[in-house]
Image (cartoon, rainbow, N blue to C red; front, top):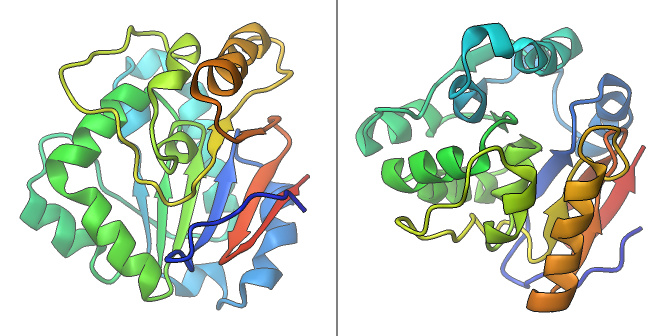
Length: 219
């Protein structure tokens, strides 16, 4: 169990991945005490990955395929060019909100423009589950500027960089991975050194399971 103090107002259920892992999802699911995945309305937000050309998105398709294999019948909803009204209507009865990996800054800009944060908070308070992978996990944190070394585009200060603040710690994914390890370490040092905040270092084989005040890294 990770010793991280939670903000008292939160009583959410979240599963936050570095990369989607079928075996980890299978370990966590019984503890969520929810119906079979196929019986739930699961909305997938693929926005962070769709910013890349299709020929470069095999990893994105593989990630989504893991959750489909798990049993979710995913209803895809790209936040790009959606209105606040459309976003609220789509998510207002969602049992599972799954946000994929990709470009964190692009994702956050779409999140802020569509009012995604408000409806996510409402649904979590009503018992919905939030699943994030990489960028989808990072935006659950209070702020995202620290993640710039892991991104393939420079940070833009045009939009606020406040995250959803569904958790009160900072997540660094891809720790120890062959392709992202050095940049992940830069993110960790930024959080510890410049921000002085709590950081959870997440390997690609792990997920953070959050159930109210209980937090655990599952592998």
